[in-house]
Image (tube, rainbow, N blue to C red; front, top):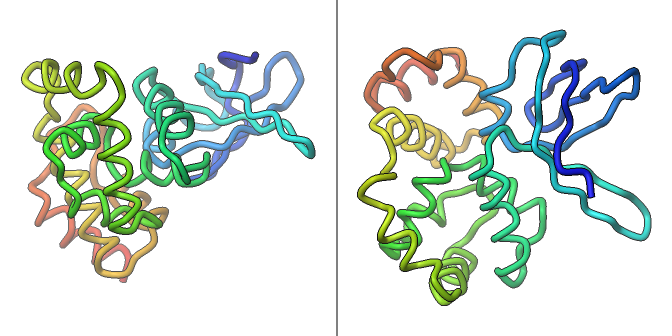
Length: 201
């Protein structure tokens, strides 16, 4: 099992990257949440990975944080009908902490706004993840100390708002990334949406 890659970021696109490890280029499929945290091309990078072995291919999925990879595996392994593609869509649609809080609070409305996730799938995610032994209790106990930061909430709300207006997740994230720089305070969600709409227009 390949658990991480450490090398140089050779290429980066919103949905995939190439990491040069000792002269070997590894293609890695990533969620938009990880794309937002990537360094510039040519810079050193460490990517956590999950290897999916199929009859016709070995596919590497990459993540910039442990919680992202953990949630990806939780969705793929424990929710019926959810494969890697939809799990990546979930990670691209909202932050890990926002997703966990949505599950704990039975917020079907927010979950169903994620691209590719309808109401039935959102309900199944809540039901099957809450029923996992210890998962709901752990999230509830941690929710007060690991609640989403105001910046995470604003960014997540802005992305979901843009998606609801008909924009693709990739385009919404790219627009938000142009506005919000990590380390600075994020504007309110309404301002992020307004500025993003100018970029998208």
